[in-house]
Length: 239
Image (cartoon, rainbow, N blue to C red; front, side, top):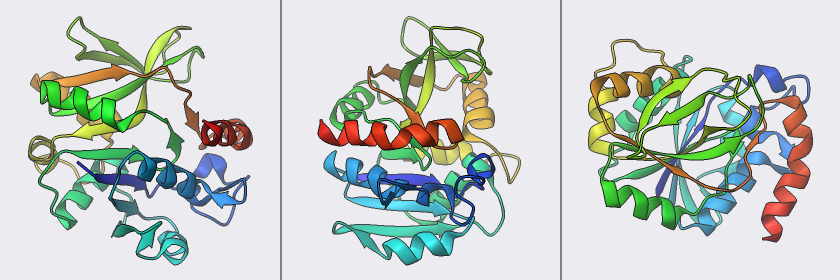
């Protein structure tokens, strides 16, 4: 599995005051767009092809990257209306033929995990979806992932008040056949992968595996976190 889909079509309204004239994934950090840092890391992990789901100001992303980045091919799926993360993923899977497991990334977060470890874990269980988790210590910010003894998701608490819980790091491996069957039969056009699809999968009894990584997590969608991104990414690149 060397294919990665990056969801990069959001409006980025919370970051607009800091980056008024660019789509969120193109926000400059250390003189490079955030998306460059993200793609460069995953190329180093073994990704051989990127499919970018774009929408808001998509032309700025295409103009910057063109059809490749560090000799890694890029294809684009462009939303002509807001579809949400679930709808955007469904559109990509309708636009391109992905037959194998694939990596899914959020275009506004950075969670530097080992692709090899993630792949091996996913293959071991052959689940429909595997989600990488990080441990959070901030109440009322993240949805808390509750897992059972088999490392499957039991439920999700929205904006948990916990000071010590597990949250979705925005790095997934998905079984293409399984997820297509779910997404292509979803009853609405615009929907969220996190808030709509995953809860429905839990209700359907679909196995969603989780794996914890003890690595830092960055969300540039929040102005305060965006200000910390420069040091965060320099520390990652030194490793």
